Image (tube, rainbow, N blue to C red; front, side, top):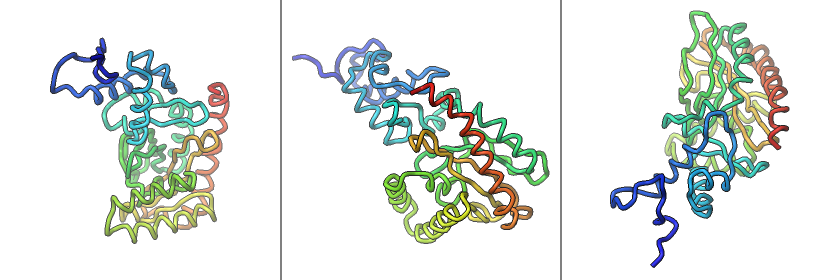
Amino acid sequence: MQPTDTEADDPQLPGKDRNFVTALARGLELLRAFGAGEEYLGNAELSNRTSIPRPTVSRLTYTLTQLGYLQHNTHLEKYRLGPGVLALGYRFLANMGIREIARPHLQKFAEVTDCNVSLGGADRSDMVYLETCHGSGPLIIRLDVGSRLPIATSAIGRAWLCGLPDSRRQQLLSELAEFHGKEWPALEAGIKQSMEDYDHYGFCLSEQDWQRDISAVAMPLILEDGAEVMAINCGGSSLRLDRDRLVNNLGPRLKEVAAQIKQELAPKYRLMR
């Protein structure tokens, strides 16, 4: 009797250990196949690098995408590491070319506003900071790369929701409703208000929603015609960031920062097509 593709010999994996979960190991091997500086790999490339049969690779990449460890680019039909990998200590940040492009813009904005300015991606019910820059004032929020903020209450999370295609957004809202349970009606009202703000201003607000002493503005960073959505925010102490400053100063300037980042990213994505 011939072994199945999940039982076949694999030079990278232990052989006949009954306690060894081959499917899990192969999923981790796919994540390890992404080297530093390599953003996108297809199923065929992953199969070649790992010696895992391509049908198995297709099932694993689908599962890892559903769990947030991979992101699928529909234009390229390839995958990149997702924000979920960051929490497990893999090389997500090393493969995020957008960080190098975004950081100078974020840092400059942080310095002139004395705020915390960050770039984030979604991981299940949270946003994960992938890059963050600080101003030098005494009332700066000291959040670093890897910090997690709830999607439902943070400006950056609500902005990310606003940037999603409608079908994907509805799916996420259903998942968030199940996750938050009895708290959901109040959280949903805040999300709806943020969506109205986004329609009106082009950015979202969070006035003491995430934490009582923190206010922020944020907007989605929609890349490759919606194939990838991230978000950027600008936040600080609610003592100095009143609604007038959020709406008439920080929000419009954050839109300019987002436009500058997207303009610099455009040639990079054109080269990948």
